Image 1 (cartoon, rainbow, N blue to C red):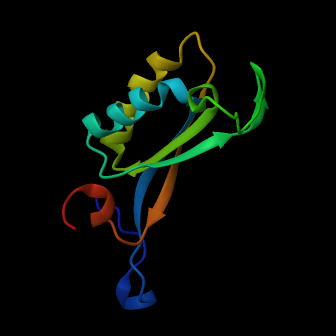
Image 2 (tube, rainbow, N blue to C red; image 1 turned 90 degrees about the horizontal axis):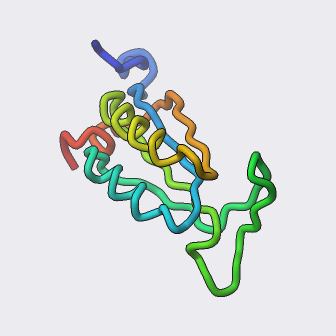
Length: 120
């Protein structure tokens, strides 16, 4: 399946379809999530610390003075579908019985080699 959906000839821009996974979890689970991502083959991820919000488990403050593990973090990565599917299966298990959410969406990337592990 060719996942290029903009043609360089016509637009001068080549974008490729990938999936993005975003997970908001307690800081104490951050290392589990990043290890899972690395083990699944992502080429990189972004961590946003001190995430604030409101949901099923109530209100979460973004910045706690002394304990980063008590705050919420968001970890996100972009990768091919098979990699994101692996991560999502593992996260589903991790999220059972505790607070946290996971989102998976289709995105367009300009430099596919950054996300596919097929170059630098």
